[in-house]
Structure formats: structure tokens, C-alpha cells
Image (cartoon, rainbow, N blue to C red; front, side, top):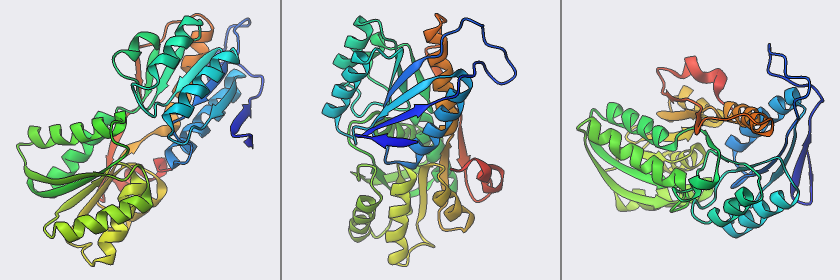
Length: 315
């Protein structure tokens, strides 16, 4: 993979079809324009690998833009994808509302839009063909279940979130709260503070939370890098035996920490599969086929008890 002027270009082999299935002789290989929310995240690396591998099967060309969590840049990049006459545009929303005007323009130009991992809002759904990814609500719910079980339904929790207002931030918090409610857990959420998907910011936030809340039982970092940043703060304060740390993603560093008994759990996000499913959906759309409104990759709770079952899927 090479990067030129901020754009990553993937050139795939000229082979068509799913493994074990022959593609129609006249099927078109799609040109896919992907606008991530940020390429600076391990989950995107795994997702991109899935797209690259599947693109090689379909003969697809994938061009990727990285707005680095800037919603204004993302809108401009989506418009650039349309101007490039891509067959399909794939968007991982920085802001679910901010992308709506751009994906509306894509729809009006006859370019189908797939949302990937971070969805648009209800208004935006009128201009998209499908959402492909893990359900962030389900991830939050899985973490909530793990926390409730680990604390025997009683304790005090702090939450370190991604960027305020983003789909994953909102849904992971809501999922966690729903799991507590369904378990009839007596768990108090002491604080919910953003760290903007940054490990370094999460470390600083957690240091502050430890000072303000001496009775923390668990921390939910809404992705593994933030959870690992929180873990560093917990260890620096000598409280790793008191405070259980949970994350989302299933990256290798987090899985290693779970294996070592330092981190208690993560909701495994099968990002590679999301990449695979995205290319398949783009291929179908390009060739006039319908795709489901939602194409979901499963979420798996990974704890010290289950880490050996899932370690091979950590990325």
C-alpha cells in the first residue's frame, strides 16, 4: 500500500468472484472510494486489510481518504469521490449529521453510498444503501454485561468516551447503560468524560478521575487504545487489583493485556470481516444487485476466561 498526497491507492488483481463461486463473465469490477473518519486507528488497519484481500478477488480498485477526524475535510473528500466518478462511495462518519449534505449529493449524482462502522443519522439513511459494520450499541451492551458480571452487579464505573456526539460514542454508552438496566445492576456511573479516541488523552483523563473518585470499581474505555491508556494510569496508581479495565476492538495489545490478567475484557470487533463485507456489497451494487439495509459483523465478549478462544481473531 502506498500513500500519495494523503490518498491511499490500492490496485487489485484482475480476478473476479467469491471464493468457491464463479462470477458472471460480464460483471463489472467496482471502483470504490472510501472516506474513513480516521486511518490512525488499529481497527482501520484490520478493516483495510479485509478490503484489500477481497478487492483482489473482485478486481476492484479502492481509493482511500483520511480526514483525520475533521468533519469539514470529510465532506470535501466525499464530494471528491463523487467528482472522481467512483462506482461506490464508502463513508465512516466523523459526525453523523455533518455528512448528510455530501451523501445527499452522491445520491443525486447516482453514486451509491455505503456507511461503514460509524453510521449517519436518520435523515442520512434516505441517501444510503446499507450500513456495514459492527453495531456499536451491541459492543457497549457486551461491555456492560461483562462489567455487571465482573462486579456482581454492584459497583462504581467511569466511562472514557470517544469524540462527543459521534455515533460510536453515543451508542456504546447507551448499550452499556441498557445492559446494566437489564441486569438490574446497582452500578453507579460516576463520570463520563471524552478522550477523543486518544490513548494519551485517556491516560490524562483517567489520572484525573482517579484523583476525584477514589472508589472506582471499573473503567470502560470506549476503544482499546483508550482502555490501555486508562490501564497505564491505574497501574501507575497501584490500583490494578482494585479496578477492572474494559475496552472495545480486540486489538492485539489489549488481548495480550487480558491474557496477562492486566485488563479484564474487550468487545471484539471483527474489523477484517467488515472490510470483506464492504467490498462484496460494492460489487453487488455496481452490478445492479440489491444489498440488505444492514450487513453486520458479530461482536464477541473477550475476557480472561475466553481469551484463548478468540486470541487468533485479535488484530
